[in-house]
Structure formats: structure tokens, C-alpha cells
Length: 378
View 1 (cartoon, rainbow, N blue to C red):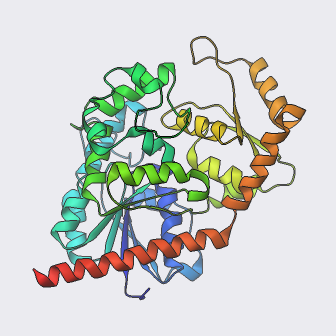
View 2 (cartoon, rainbow, N blue to C red; view 1 turned 90 degrees about the vertical axis):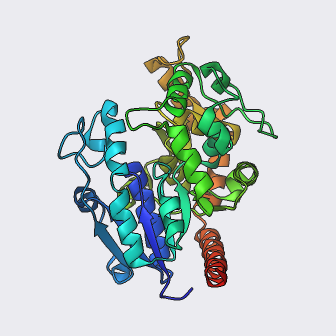
């Protein structure tokens, strides 16, 4: 890949998104790509420092976040605000469109990689002859559960929250990936009901997927092969897996020899980081995609989910202790522990993941050539 290649990254204003985008950028910069990471001043200052050897290929571009009524003036990320204010943060984020378009016009990058919130990026990228890709920080199973863009936009096949509590009809293989109880009701409202920003999460994701040239996500075919293949059929465009290592401080903690397992919320990044070290997983999903991730891991035989009460929400210390004993010491949990160790051979396989990075860059290179040929003919 020529050193003149330039890729712009524009993540959503949440550290669970910005950090994976940062890791993706570092992986690309290590291959000689010039990377520009766009975000606000406060967010950039809170990101981990770059390795010195990547600084010549990686640049941060600060842009001011527009002021929006209903959003605290110093707030620039979801970590700064209560969940009720997130729609106003989306409004402010949408207000970045003119500035981002001007930057794309000035920079003329080869590719801009955006987040699911950034539905307006593919349109302005195409306007200036720039390729666009959606980088998902979610698992392939979570994306596949959401369905094709038309279903994300309208929710026509899943009118009631209960419809989210079973595997969708487009799953052509056995899967227990589905929401439960209270989580299904909240997700249904978030996906289908427009918020104060004027759009629902489902509408944003649908337009981003439809508008971009290809999709990439943090996974691999060795782990989520069936879901990745299904996504290409649902989206009708290339879906490229690329695994990026996690946030260094957390990886250092998980690498300690005294740690043999992890009890956590089933966030996708934490799952990858725990499996990187072959830890047995005890999952207690709380919000968003975490329940879907938990069912994916249970299906794969590498995790155990804490049993909830009859309301589907509550849990007891007794259940925590019982589940922990099963995962860590009981003979019945031995197969789970073995499978978690086997996953380490995939998630921690740097040669495998360098191969995925090469495939990503090869697709990028071929897409760039096609784009230039199309522009020349026009």
C-alpha cells in the first residue's frame, strides 16, 4: 500500500467507539497509511497517547462541537452526560456535518471510516469522490440480529418488543441470540422511535449501511463466520472483519497470571480482551447489545450467563456465587474453560489478524482504483 494513501476516521462521541477507532487507526498507520482521526478537543485529550513510532503517520484533527440546547456546554462524549441527554449529543454531532465536509474537500482522503450515528458521512464523501466505510464496534451477531437496512429503518417485521425475544427469520442456522424481557422493550423503542435528534438509532444505522461502500467490524470468520456471511447477504455489500487489540491498561490487568476468569457486562470489546488471554467468561449483561453478545458466547460454549429472577432483571448474590463456582472450579465447567483457552489461539493470533488487515487494505486498494476509473470516465 502506497504511503500516500490517506484514511480519515470519524467515530461517534463515546469512548466505547473512539477507543476501537483509535486501535484501528494505529493498525493502519503501522502499515504506512496516513491516518487522520477527527474528534473534539476534549475527547482527543482524553485518548491514550500514540506510540512514538506511529506519530509520523497518525494525526488528530480537532473540531469544535456545536452548542445545542439541552446539552451541557462542556459535554463532548456520552461519559459526560446522563443517558437522557444522548439524543442532544447526537444533534450536536450532526451539526459537525458542514465542518467535516469542508475537511474532506480540503484533505481529499482516499477513504473515510465512520460510525453508525454518522448517516450523513457517506453522502458527503461520495459528493467529493471519497470512498466511505462503516466500522462497527458491535459483534457480527448483533448486527445480523438487527437485520437488513429496510428492517432497521421501518421495523416492519418486528412491530412488538416480544418480536425481539426470538431469533429472526433471516437466521438460517441455530442461534439463541435474542433480547430478553425489559431489554427487548427498551431496544425496540430505541431502534424504532425517533428521538430528539429527529431520527431513531435504526434509521441512522440503515442509512449509514446503505450509503457506505463497504462495512468492516471487530471480529473474525473463525469466531463469527456464519454471521459475517449472513451480513453480506443482508447488506448486499462487502463485510470485512478486522480484529484490533484492546485498550492497553485493561489488557495488562487481564494478562496477570492470578486471573483465570472474568465476570463482566458482556461488552464486545471486553469479550475480545478476555478471550485474548483465554479467560473463562461469566456474563451479566446490562444494556444495549450486551445480552446479544452473552447469548452468542453461550452458544459458542465459552461463557456462562448469570441467571436472572422472574422479572428478567434482578439477580442475587447466591446466583453470582453459584455461577462463579461453575465457571471457575466445578467439573461441569471444565469444557467451558477448555473452549475459552481454545479461543485464545484465535483472538490472540497476530498472524491471523495481520492477514485480515492485509485483506482489508487489498479491498481498499481495489476499491480506490475502481473509484478513480469511474471518476475519469465521468
